[in-house]
Length: 75
Image (cartoon, rainbow, N blue to C red; front, side, top):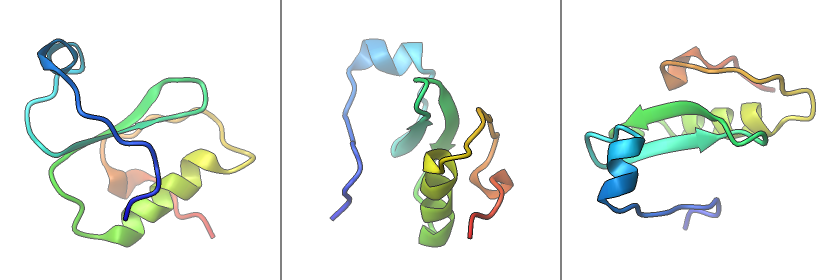
């Protein structure tokens, strides 16, 4: 029941994106840059929803994060 774009990738994409495990979630900003790569399942849906809100907000400025926990909370 996820409503945002999702894709499977072949071995070439896996190599290019340095994907080492499944599932891996990549969040791509409006400029086309990968801002977050999260390996493994999300155990906290609020963190994922906050990330989506953060990267789609009007006043978004390009940001890159190592972990989803680093993303500032959006009200």
